[in-house]
Length: 325
Image 1 (cartoon, one colour):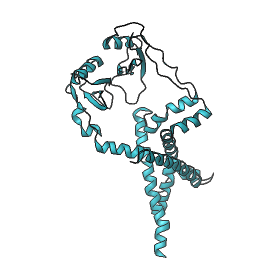
Image 2 (cartoon, helix red, strand yellow):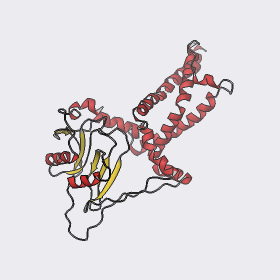
Image 3 (tube, one colour):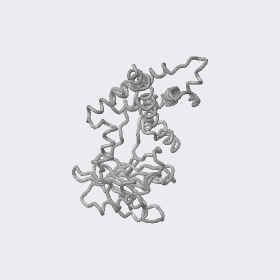
Image 4 (cartoon, helix red, strand yellow):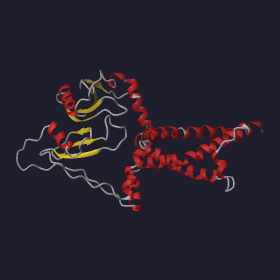
């Protein structure tokens, strides 16, 4: 949607080798004197330009940069339509109250999934028929069978969407339930040390070069500049360039004062850690690459199919007979 609304921000000026992240950082710093630069993201398979964030007081700007010339292409405006659509999805345009209502709706969806499975069950001898639609039958029967088949094919996806949604609406309660089954590790981000004497920190190029020595041959996907005296210089690497959308990145934290690599928390080990780490990817469909996104898109249409077929079935069974009586 953003690319359609602002194509000039996502269209490189010409071909050529990808610019180094340091050159992009310097270009943005020159274009925004007096601003704080948070970092830069390399082009991805969905976004062909560099992306950076700059702040000044409470002002936050998203900047797009040409991937070859490093020229600043412009700022991404907060389009009211997109922002409203996001708030409708997150909070039903009702703030915290709307988000709570969203969570209650997720619980209702889980109840519908459970009750739907009971209603769907056609018996042990005919269970296969519950997955198909016989188009040769009466139209009312076809609509009902379409509702039944769409429900059974998508029930796991719909339930998963509701469960992952609950993890965002009621995060503490959700973590508590998962932690009761399996302990959840509290990961602490690395911190830079406190220098005992005045030191000159390494430059941006030196930092990135030091990070590269720990992941030989991988392209830089993101650079996050340190915030505060204890913040770290973070460089994240992808398996290929441009960065595959939704892929896992390798993180290297460096001490902002000395450039030494800092130890990070061990990889999640418990079942609870694995569950919590997968909530966001499963909710938005960033699993399984492009095939996973296509599957999530198709399955995402199933609630609309169920609503329409359910409404038609209800109308024929409840409203039409009452009008004829």
